Image 1 (cartoon, rainbow, N blue to C red):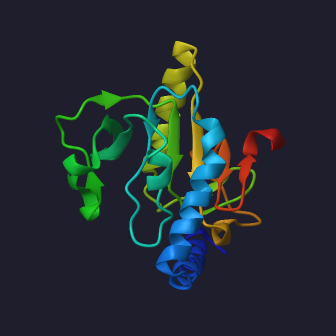
Image 2: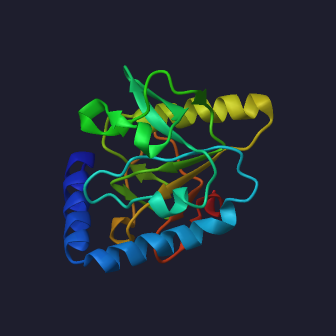
Length: 190
């Protein structure tokens, strides 16, 4: 399948999975996701999260374990991360909540990455516009120059794990993948 067909397939699987969950079951899975992420959080100085839309897995329980954290803001063809509280977020690109233009810009050392599908080797299929690929490329370059680590963790429902996905040269691999069932270090297979 090509990327368009794969997006259609995994969005359908995600939608069906979430539709099968009660509100309590969804919360339990999202809390389990946070418990798998908890061991990674000590030592993180700034995390970048995201505003989940529709049936995307919601990182809100992870956010509750963090101190102040950042959210992406779309600026032309790119995203940058800005510290913001949920109460200060406003609808932005495609109606997705994002920080105000005046919110302080930061470079996170942990980025929680939304996705449509992912392999356990960290190959990510996103929405198709390349926002996170460009952001991760820039953040990794800047982190390397500063001698700091950057950890990119894809968050997914278990049904979004793919056996294989096509990857283009510009696709940025994830360092880890977290689901409600597990945390996988994708770097081990590289």
